[in-house]
Image (cartoon, rainbow, N blue to C red; front, side):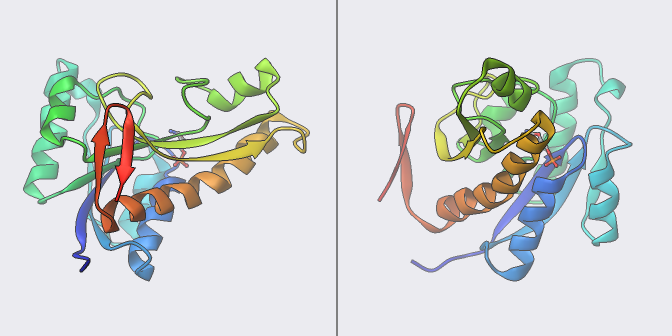
Length: 204
Ligand code: GRF
């Protein structure tokens, strides 16, 4: 199958290390894609400075400037559409998307979450896993639907908890795997044929 380079938009709220992994994989040719937009809902997101310095097209759209979730989402989507974005990657974007946003890019929005979903959705997933005392946790890349950390799973990577002396160490080990998993999962979706059957993604 011939690969055509897809136009990606990345949404961030903070550090942006997963964004960096995706940008670098696009630049090295590991991903058949180009990052055409980085949008942050926070002015002070360190990731946005990195993206600007890298010469990427960036926008800051603070959600507090809008009267509702959907009004903010409409501004974000308007900008993504203007840039001809085909795939949207959430990379530490701390906002739940409105159903309208999700329907605008059907099966074309991805998220990464630092646990083996459906365990430990929501905030501080690594801390939740640590406090629960599980032997294994990890990270998950999934298609986004209107529920938090919920859509069909594209890929998962398990990480053992036992070698870690602290939750911070566990976070670091998971993050290292997140960067690899996000690129791997995206590459698979962009370069293979697949369909969604119920909650399952079936690759041909
Ligand atoms: C990551 O742990 C990701 O799984 C979660 O938020 C964090 C973002 O980190 N959704 P970064 O901004 O990509 O460095």
